Length: 214
Image 1 (spheres, rainbow, N blue to C red):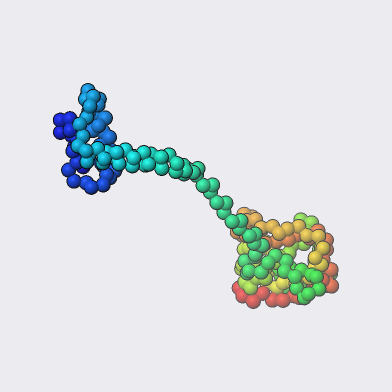
Image 2 (cartoon, rainbow, N blue to C red; image 1 turned 135 degrees about the horizontal axis):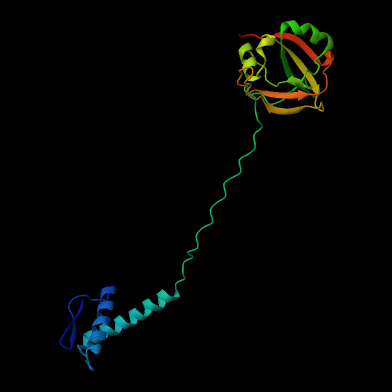
């Protein structure tokens, strides 16, 4: 540590100048000169130390100025990886219109009543008052679920059988669509449906098959 006593600068203990010595020594000498001391009497051994202090200070300043300035630009946020597209699935986990049989056809289901089954088997599926034949890719195992999800008219009778329609891939269909809720029939809807404006001949149908559960 370097201290000043009157006009004399002495060093008490530190053998080598450290950062505190550098700052303290320069501050003391500058302060003495500022207060009007034109000459500063320094002991010979202290004069050598002050020379070392000045040389060290000069090196520190040069080294500091020569160091590169760190790049403080903020890093660009990484773009999240794109999520792969997943084909939609119907409630039972099978894809819409799954191909069956390896012959380039897609399978759909049409739910109806036992009373209407004989006519469908003989003449096929024909568009009703809406102008469409309604199909679904979902194979239901519950009669009540068929009525609810396809929002069917209960006054016609409960749907207890179904036909399988094996259609060519280029068969014109509208869909898939989500079946809307029916306030008239008090059915929630939510199932998946396709619509065909073309009649489906008996040769493309299999059935009727009973729906297993209630």
